Image (cartoon, rainbow, N blue to C red; front, side, top):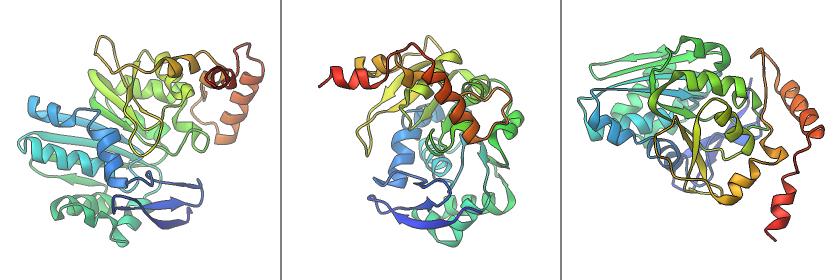
Length: 283
């Protein structure tokens, strides 16, 4: 079982440090801020809540529940009559339960903290204007329970690609794209060329979200012709290097080490220039 320890962030909220993945669950800049700036705002949750009677969100890697909580808070403030439906995928139920035991969810208003508590212990919350279903297990399998073209927004928030490549592969991102409505948004904190290449392979177009708490931008993806903020010329250049060779998991059952090794072999045999050629050209 993963060993979790408390990790304070700059906005006053607290997240966990994962001993297994050697990463925090959220940015050190601010766990609550990250949920809003990198997921809720780019996915235009407020605008969609005002325009639609029902809003569907797929939250991949629910974790402490902060991304879902930020979405719930935004929808309730934007239009409390909108019915919000969230399907959340999480591999380790101990994470949201420890977040509750440690008092980490108390940064949210009591009504939302109650929702997060119920979700963690009952895996379902149903009210007049909210349905939250927490699916526990490998997201590569539990995603099969999400209907096709169902999501108005997908929050993709696993640990980083080098530490959790299973959820950044061409095959898994294709499954996510299958779940996305034609006018929906897929948002993630990652700006990895490999991840963006996988999104392009899935038929999505990509855009950049302004940096929040770090130098690199985040990524937003959607189907054409939805307009997206463009990525920079340098980011586009990285898509033409070995860095853009994506992670692959053809049977959706490979281990992280198998996925990483296969990608390294593909990179070693590639005729594409290394990403270092881009960095050197900018010196």
